Image: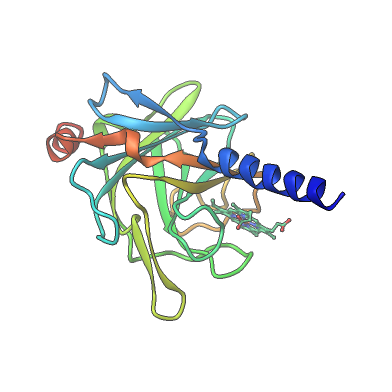
Amino acid sequence: MRCTSLVAAASAVALAGTALAQADSTQYIDAVTGFTFSQYVNDKGIVFRTALPADAQVNANYDAVLQLIVPISVGWAGFAWGGSMTYDPLTIVWVNGADVVLSSRMAYGYYVPPAYDDATYTVLKKATHVNATHYQLTALCLGCTLWGDSDTGITSIDPTAKGSLAFAFATAPVTAPSNNASSFSIHDVVGHWTHDFSVAANDDFNATVAKNL
Ligand code: HEM
């Protein structure tokens, strides 16, 4: 009896290990921008893509490109670089007429996240637009791959590994769409996934960024 339980426990551990090792993202080679992305698509059809420089190193604050493609019916969508609502950089996106608005936030509790200034974004305009069905943001971020301080601890994304990411979105529009400091209401849906950063190493990262500016 005792032996049986031990075997069962060992199998459970092995299974948990396997589940964690599987990525929910896949490689996506984008002919339009020239980036090789790691891509995850959620049940709502929101596309989350990351691209990294080939020479990125863990524990260094390296550049990253984020591309979000969001159905026009979504009021705002958010991407959590550390896989949780709180204490990691959040990239929020919404639409303002023909413009796509990017807002950098960090949450310190379960309330509207304030602006986060330690992440600096450059919108890649040639790959950012609104059409009848979707809005698309492509942005370079410095400050999205390493964050924290001595109190909360430093977290860094390992560019050669899999990491935990999270999304949130709401159908309700934000309060003041033209203002990237706008307030907005709580998400309708949140989710977590395992993202394989290693499939999106870009040899020509800087040149590809420049091409899409
Ligand atoms: C008005 C703004 C927001 C409010 C009031 C809010 C509130 C909350 C609350 C109360 C929870 C806990 C739910 C539970 O435990 O059942 C939660 C969870 C969560 N929220 Fe928000 N939230 C807001 C914005 C955001 C944004 C912008 C993101 C960006 C990605 C986000 C991502 C998440 C995630 C991923 C969770 C699941 C728990 C975790 O992984 O941390 N939230 N939120």
